[in-house]
Image 1 (cartoon, rainbow, N blue to C red):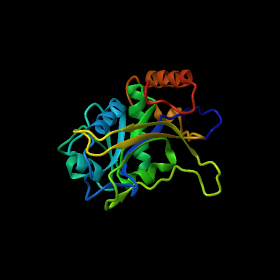
Image 2 (image 1 turned 120 degrees about the vertical axis):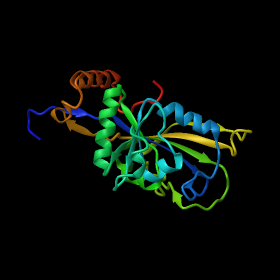
Image 3 (image 1 turned 135 degrees about the horizontal axis):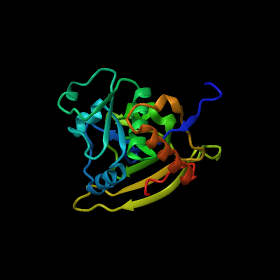
Length: 231
């Protein structure tokens, strides 16, 4: 990078995942092993208005684009369903998915986007994630073919991990929620920030330069290393 090129800090990446406790299962044959209406409502609340990155199988399990969100599908080959849903954005590699999420976040005035599955997609983006909402579903032992096995606990030698708990909320079993569950928000102790050269982003929309300036001002005004979902 040349000395006179200005770098811009890109939007913060976050994840949302629901997994069984204690087996850490997130799917069985591309379907959720439970129905938790409250958790789905919270997922909707947190992600609406933002870009979301998902794999092809995750989109197929949902069946249609998530409304009021920019849906980015990461797949090595172009999915056949793109013709049916023209609002979808396709990325053939993680770098393209990140660029699309960055641009859409800046255009919409957001400072974050979400990675929402499946298991391989979580692993691909794990190094970029600064915040994770984990729903632990207390359904007992189950079998499944997809897992989210990231461990946030203390190490055996009692040294600190890179994750801390920001919030933790318990929810009971109800007529709408099949099992009791807990939602924990983890954040990195040392946030990972990505940067792009400002000139690389220019010219993508007629007023993108103005939007980028507004985004930078908002990011500077925020002044925190880790961005909150509840603004």
